[in-house]
Length: 273
Image (cartoon, rainbow, N blue to C red):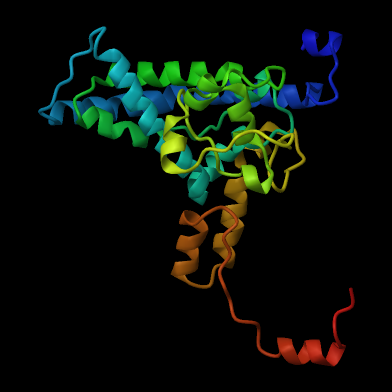
């Protein structure tokens, strides 16, 4: 924050007091709630680990491979949390700030238990539960420094392989060409392999396609769940209810026009520009 103050840059989003306070408040709440989520996840992981006959010993040789596998699972977890609305309702918290700085990194959801589901395959493959959680911590900590627009493009070999501030700025941008790109945690090789990688070009606009314009931590963490509740109440069929929960964010049912709508339009005359 001091650096931004001493060296202002019109191309940097910088900090604001209210936005930073909201991010830190949301992050503090997430840290407290995450104790419960990690306890539940650990209990489930231990139970599944006892059931599987497979065992992978954690050594200096196997740990990098376990971390690589965890990063692969992280890619799919992150991707699905963007593409399934009920999962996006939690993850949207992290994208809700129009600023992009270190405080944005700690603006995390209060519903992190859904993320842990994607790491169950590691446990079933014989990875000890503690190792799964340790790798998750390493993955998340490695992403903290990415939340800055003060670090430019790094050498191309690094940009093509690892998650960088440039790659993650694309992920946080709200422009159409940048949406749903660069899901990787530590590595970008998964995005390149599965067609979700995008290179930074035009200056990113941070936030959501429709910003929530609030610094209230409770609204920040709950606004999309509230929107889902309103849509479910308005749903006419179970198929629509499933769509509001499981389809992409922004999905709307294709409903036929109400009876008499066309007649009413004709009576009113054509729309004017």
